[in-house]
Length: 111
Image 1 (cartoon, one colour):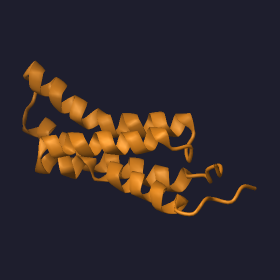
Image 2 (cartoon, rainbow, N blue to C red; image 1 turned 120 degrees about the vertical axis):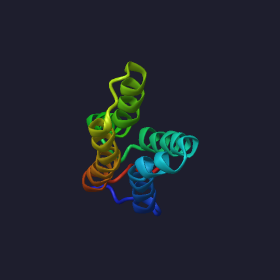
Image 3 (cartoon, rainbow, N blue to C red; image 1 turned 60 degrees about the horizontal axis):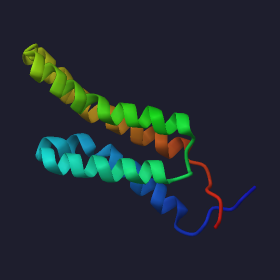
């Protein structure tokens, strides 16, 4: 078994938390949400603490809601029910992704 390098837990937790707040950050300010999303995905994909399938699932969960907002908004199918569902999903999906990341993190190799 390989021991985790110093700071390992902090980096994985930081990536999970950043991805977990993308929905809330996007509701505060769309540009802030985009910056947080890019930062979180950069940390996620540059880390070897997760498998490729976990990274793909997390990316899909975090990007799905903003993409749905754009698609519904452009198509004109956005009603009050859709807005409420997407607002709830915008918080639930990133939080679920963050929980998944924290639970499935594995030790990284030491350099």
